[in-house]
Image (cartoon, rainbow, N blue to C red; front, side, top):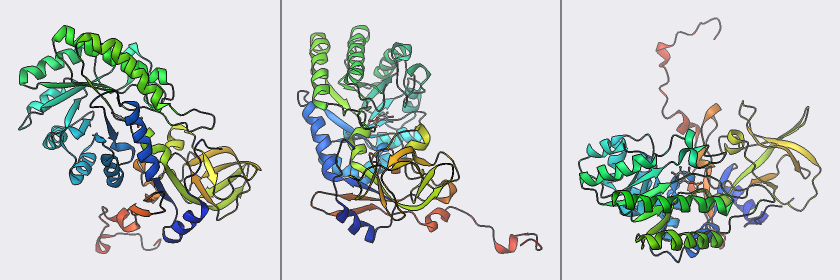
Length: 426
Ligand SMILES: Cc1ncc(COP(=O)(O)O)c(C=O)c1O
């Protein structure tokens, strides 16, 4: 059993698939709203707390807009993500630009939006200088190197390309101040998909202490601490969801013991979660199109790794339900596969499943973050539609499926007159 019961029944899905061919991503609006309200509740003690949704997780304007209705800002890392904010009218300090390996043009776009610019290192200050107007509000991304262990998705901090050292941050603030920038923040993103509250709290403790050191050594008083994202999703049965209230209370205690006595209070706490906000509330719906028995049983579905690459890329586990057969007993193991010519195009390996027949609908759980957004077109497989539904039963298509015309839109086909095909073979 999955830890969250499906928020829809077979009849809703039957009516959706009558209009929208599988595969498609389906997001549960009420679930997303509820989740972000829980996060705000957990940090209600901190005046000015703000969650910036990591747009990369689910870069659909409807999702970003509904989160903005809930008070979220947007954490962007690329021009496309900034365009989403611009088109929605989200700007100023509601946008955090946390990028890496960035160009002057990208900083220019973020500065035009009035975004808070989170620098990956002091080398970026040179790029800021090249802008027609300096940003008012800058923060730095800290990488603790050997001081901290990361985790499997984000990797070992000292091997990570992100962020900069303590010394670079201190020097960076000083340089920014010389340029006339006066408002500062501090950021880190050390762990990803983390389910242990202690590990999440360790980031808060590390950043609070660093903010105090920076005040003592440089006189710079940061206005906010951005704890990054990283709250995990319990993808596997048996894993436990992060208790947001426990996390918020833990950060509060650290704030009281480190920030209050330092004179830095009031200090805003910020986060830029993606996965935990939309991940559990998105489902990839796909239909069984083939069943093959060779050395093992292969259940072929009409989605591929191009719709959800996490299992293929990280060996990530995603729970599967066969719609209408959730209560049926498992009858044996199978691999659930897509049709890419890559053997890692598998949604599940050796998964115990009930009796499955061609035509069954399979629900792939927890696909709402880094699902559609990581899509690609290898093998000419196309990205699917995205749909949003709510508890009133309203269903809205928020992105159509790609077509072959979209796929070929960027291709320059050779002109027939220029072709020199060997006639005897063609
Ligand atoms: C800079 C930054 N912030 C926030 C996030 C969101 O993290 P998560 O989706 O784990 O909450 C990411 C994810 O890759 C990131 O790179």
